[in-house]
Length: 346
Image 1 (cartoon, rainbow, N blue to C red):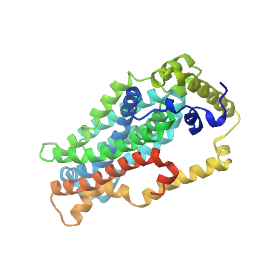
Image 2: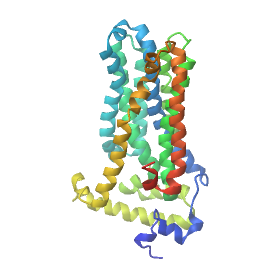
Image 3: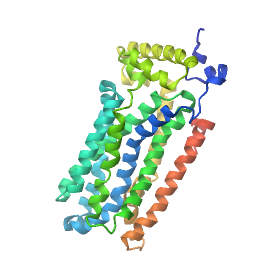
């Protein structure tokens, strides 16, 4: 059988020709498990975003210098973002050079080291160092997880499965407020709040040791035998051969272009340029709404509104994190039912 561009695996034409080969979210537990394990990186991202908002209330109580300096408070909060920028910028290169699996393992090691340093920090400056390391881990994970999930997912459920990473982020934010509440009466409060984030990172590290490398990356590195072994766990025999042919052709095309095309040349294509502007623009407008400020300083904002109790401030902040998580669940349902273009403006 000769596959045309309209009927290759990953296109709607192919699945229209062979509707019996269409997969659902729960038809392959292997793919689902892979998605959840990779998505723990998103959980770490979300937890790190939300936990500092509650921990900061108690950090100010322990360190007088932090309580008296808005600059120190802002540095403690924002240093994770600085690390995330560096991690995300280098994450693409790490993924291409060493693979998605090793990139995830590296992110877990860096994140765990940062969490331990934060929990044991004797002063605000060591705490800032820990925040920087945690940010580095989060940045690498935020680049790696969506790519890993996408490259191992059937096209018909790829949007929803990749969006699972976002659900893990918002779930991590919600979890962080619950953890903050749980440790409000425990000696060491903020140290437990920040240090406990090492637990999911360690869990992901152990589980990732048993996970395969991305089949697409294996094809790019000419390790076709291992790639086919991974694909055989995802697709049945009827679809496997077509997926192998498709990935082989895509890998050869990508390797050919890699020798002659620069990053800036990609934007000469109108379709890619518009898709980039739409995707990046939507992300930018989301940030302009101020949601990051709300997530990082939610309990502090609540206290400024007149609710002085730390516990009450954390409890009220749960509503924001909960709404955020629910919105993500709705988005996952819509994205594969109505498409990315229609869901984006919503």
